Length: 145
Image 1 (cartoon, rainbow, N blue to C red):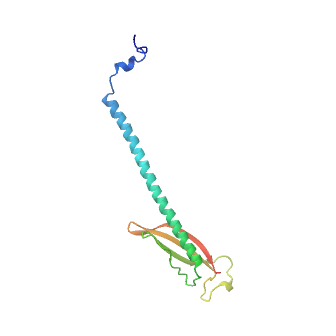
Image 2 (cartoon, helix red, strand yellow):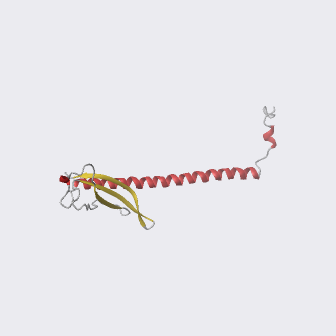
Image 3 (tube, rainbow, N blue to C red):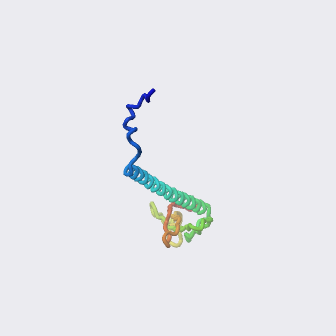
C-alpha cells in the first residue's frame, strides 16, 4: 500500500531544508520586529513616568491651593508653602494684585492696592539638568471673605 498523497507533496519531498540566505532573511525580519517592539515599549515606559510625575505635581499643587484657601487673608501676599513635599519637588507661590472690572475706590486698600482680589499662581518644580523646571502650574483667584 502506497502513500495516498505522495504526488501532491512532491515539491516538499525534494526540498531537504532551508538555505542560509532564507535563514538570514528570517532572522533579519525577526530582529527588525524586535527592535520596533523594544523601542515602543521604552517609549511607553517613559510616557507612563512623565504622566505619573505630572499627576503627582497636580495633586501637590491642588493640595497647596486648598491650604491657601483655608488660611487667613494676608495683606503682604506671602503665602508660605506649608504642605509636605517629596524631596524631588519644590513649590513656588506668587501673588499678584488682580485689578479687574470697575476700579471702585472703596475697594482699594490703604496702601493703594486692590485689597479684595488676589491672583495666586502655584507652580510645582522639579530640578532638571541642574535647574528648576516647572512641571505643573495653576492660577486661581482668591477673594477677601
